[in-house]
Length: 376
Image (cartoon, rainbow, N blue to C red; front, side, top):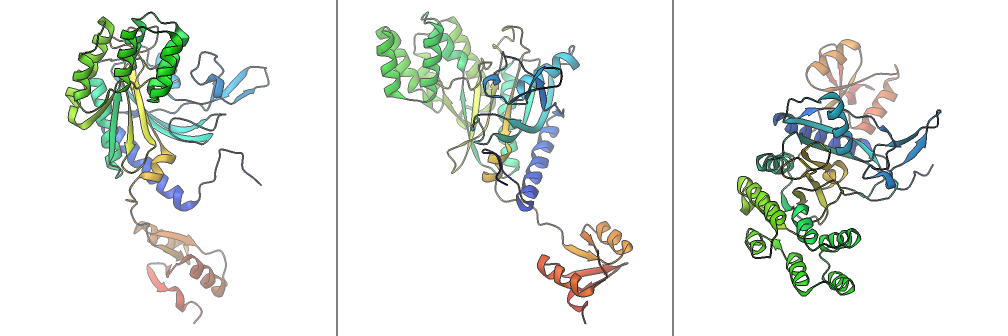
């Protein structure tokens, strides 16, 4: 049987490695105070959902339209509004599980069924909270042997620069996309087609080049900034100071990956890999008062991608032994070994199976013996 496009089987060696990574990541989140929640895989369809156009939809017996979970942040916000309306805040939560998308792409993978692990820090919107997420993200990758580089941006800064020019929404969205892709030719073509002023053209071209180390922040200060752009840049600068400017790359043309992102955003790339392994950001204005959303920020790791790039620090699997009776099985497992039970009295069959699996020893009661002697 052929699998649906964009899905895959996971075989035992990879499964063991993924579970090891999942446990290490979750333990790191827990050590920082992030408590686990589990969210339903089925959700009520909502046209306002950021992934509604790409979500798998189905209809239940009553005619209600449901969707398979396609993104975690919105689900966590819903849970917090219902279950933790009064906090206490800040509220630190972690999650992990499957997501499904009809399109064969996502921020953290190219599968239609994939797994994310992530955290949300809710109820606060301070530079300290944002710096905490940067530190947690980087330390989590280091915990599983991944050296990574963090890139930080601020869609609110880009919004303010474009918004102050009074540009129409459709043009603003196209500029966000072009600047995020760092496409100079596309940007020039869009500027010409829109008939933007020379000053705006110079500003956008400058923003397109604002990528690099701490000097990027100083260069941004020299642009003609309005009040909102100045506030966004000041927030980002404070986050960088708390985390360590020299540890970051800045991309002030970085745009939203989801429309709800309005504060700082960040991405992590593993050494030697061009693909993003971690991503997140803030989904409210710096003062936490934007719209009716809950002030918060977070990030997610793609488990499939992490599995590919993480250093192979998987501890050696315990020895597998063949238990010839229940007492032997219990004794071996108490010693930390893996004990497979016998299923037949045919010693030759047991010996053949053990040879295929690489099992060298059998155990009876508290006595181990060499498998090779079973047919003697």
